[in-house]
Amino acid sequence: MFDVKERQRRRGALIARALTGCWRAAPPPWDLRPEELDDIGPLLLDSGVAGFIWRRLRASCGEAKRWTFRFHQAARACALYALRQEQVLARALAFFAAAGIEPLLGKGWVAAQSYAEPNLRPYGDVDLYVTVEHAARAFALLRDPQFPPCPVDLHVGFAELDDRMPEQLYARSRCARFGETTVRIFGPEDHLRLLALHLLRHGARRPLWLCDVAAALEALPQNFDWGYFLSGDRRRSEWAMIALALAEQMLGAWIEGLPIARARPPRWMIPTIWREWGRPYRPRRPLEMALRSPRSLVRELIHKWPNPIEATVTVGGTFERWPRFPFQLADCVVRTGRWLRRICSHLGQ
Figure (tube, rainbow, N blue to C red):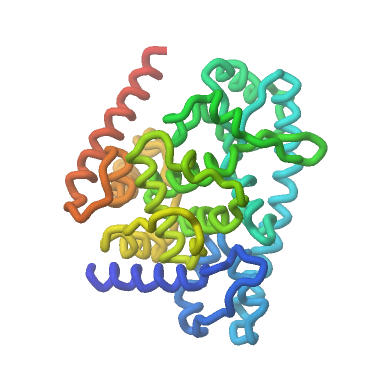
């Protein structure tokens, strides 16, 4: 077991090296040996970062031609899918506009705009945020047979940003051109905070999410309001600063000259992320989908066991050197309670 964990951590550290500066117009020279790429190549292909790796490999000395071709093919597929999704999303946004609903768009497409080549940043679900007042009409739109086949993840409220008033989020939002329509996106302070907190809430299990934080950090406008970025819930502000520190320490994001104090992630945190990155990423399924098979249920329960980062955020803890196991147990209790409430509400309908 120890050897497996150590190998996962070693692979995760290699993935971090492979992704260093991958979002920049001129990424750093490729410095992994061919045998190291052989070890992590399949993980990179499956983790949504293939386009970034190809950008670095194409400028190398050609020592990994076999992998360069595979990553190039994956990058092309990602770019074509992104183009199709943008077209479908533009139609979906026009649908919302015609109904008088103006959602806020976050993560995915917005995060991609901070990369040198946005179409190489993949995105699946489209994250749209609406106020509680517009929720019923928005869900009715999604059920409309005329609604475009767009994989919308509709958020009622503003998730990690719910410590701020909706009026404040809209007042600081911006309009971006999207095809023949426009879309309202979070302001840079809110969006960086959203990316940072989303990363930690999901246990930093995907390297793509930390790349998003690093890319957004280096693309900040000159008038970025750090005071506003750190406003709101104090514990969440501490978490956000730790996420920025992870982007610097793990991926080499530039923070020199920024008017912020450097946070210090605890010693256990980076090895935990390396281990997550060093094993195949598999999205979690709703538990009720595995109830018919005891074996599937056991596998899903094991897969849902939270890592220390995820558990700390779920229970509202601090990232210190305390043992994390109590946080993980508390996380399971909280999530079990939510699941039971959801099941009871469905049974009562």
